Each structure stands twice: as structure tokens, then as C-alpha cells.
Length: 164
Length: 123
Image (cartoon, rainbow over all chains, first blue to last red; front, side, top):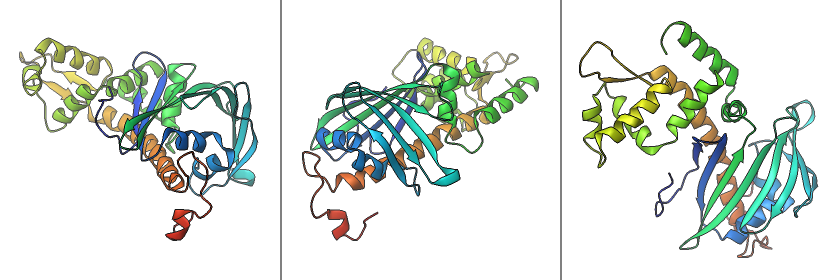
């Protein structure tokens, strides 16, 4: 689905058809080593992961096979925490779990693959495998103020109205 | 309902199907008309249309013999709004990463004198 030879200068999102997975692709003017470091060095990671305008505090961070991590974003009442375990940490591939502490049962399995594509560029391919299609859709819709349930309500209404 | 939305997201994952939706956003079209610009069989396009139909993204009129395909804009707008917002969040994150990468040497070690700070763009 991702055509080789085409630059992905803006993040590309794909919802997998077969499994409850989200794919993210993006090309960077960087080496795999640089991108690897930006994902595994806690000080560097805290500088870009965001969300924008929110400070990120690393609670613990042990980027090696079998290590664990936790960080909070924002401060006080507004703060929210994420945690998980590193399963595989190598420059070719990072595999880790990810959960938002407000929904501790929804654990996603994430992989990060970094491939050199020439001319000093590297293609990032990140995947999040969720526990169910419902959880995957919830994650996709989580970036909206109106959550996934509003969407389900809208689809319910459309079904009731015979529009679907 | 989760199944329905998953079918929508999955239907939108394919570039040919996104193209077909683009085409339909300017008006209803028959499968033959949709297939014309592609180097694929009408049967292949027909399969894509079926996936879109199962997801509720398009409907086909039962009356007209040519059975033109119609885009259900409300369903498409909702799903694409979610995907776009998710995409925008990811892109914002990656642009912050772009800035950071400028300040790393080839091994990923932070430079002693960051380039961005020299340009006055320190975040």
C-alpha cells in the first residue's frame, strides 16, 4: 500500500484491513541511528513526543530488552500518564507495549522499523496492534474532541434513519 | 457498531478505493465509468466498490439499470475527519522530531552547539 520510491514527506496513516492495527509512515532527512536515538534516549524523546504545549516528564525509562518505561504529559489535574515495556530494542526494530493509564486494560503492541531509503533519508514505519477492532477505532478517534462513541451514535442514527 | 466503523476505516486504507471516493465526490458514476481511468478489470473495480458498499461508504440505486454508485458523504466525512485529525497529530509530532534531528550528529548524539539554537528557533 506504500509505493516504494515515493517520498512520504507528511505522516501517512493507514488502518489495517486484516488486523486491528494502525500503520504510520514518515520519511526523515536523518540516519536510522539518529531516529533510533530520538526514540530511545529519554531526554531526546521528551523533547518531541508532545502533545504540543505540554511538558513531558519521564518517570522511568530503561530502553533495553525487558526494560520498562513511563512518562506523564502535562501538569497537575491535566496530567496524564502512559507506560509500557520494551520487548526488543535494536536499531533495526524496537518492539514495546503501550498503554494509557486511564485505560490500563487496553494494551497496544507497538513496533518501530527504520529503513534507509537513500540520499541520507530514512523511512519510519510505526505500527500499533490493538486488542480489538473496537479498541483500534477508539484510538483512531481519540484525537478528536468528539470521541468514538459520538461516531457510533452518529452511525446508529444513520442506521435508524435507513441511510446505511 | 464497532464492526461498521472498522469496515469504514479498512475500506479507506486502500489507495484505489480512496481514488474511487475522490471520483465519486464530484458525482455518481457507474462501475464502468469508474474503471475507465484504471489499468485494471471492471471486475476488480467492482470488488472495490463492493467493499465500499459493505462499509456503508457508497450505495447503489436499485431502480436504475446502470446502478450508478453514490458516495454517502456523511459517513465518509466522519471517518476522514477522524483520520485527518489523527494524521495531523502525528505530523505535528514528527515536525518537532525534524527540529530535534537537526541538533543530532550522525550517531544521534546531541551537538554541543545546536543548529536550531543558532537559528533562534530553540523550542
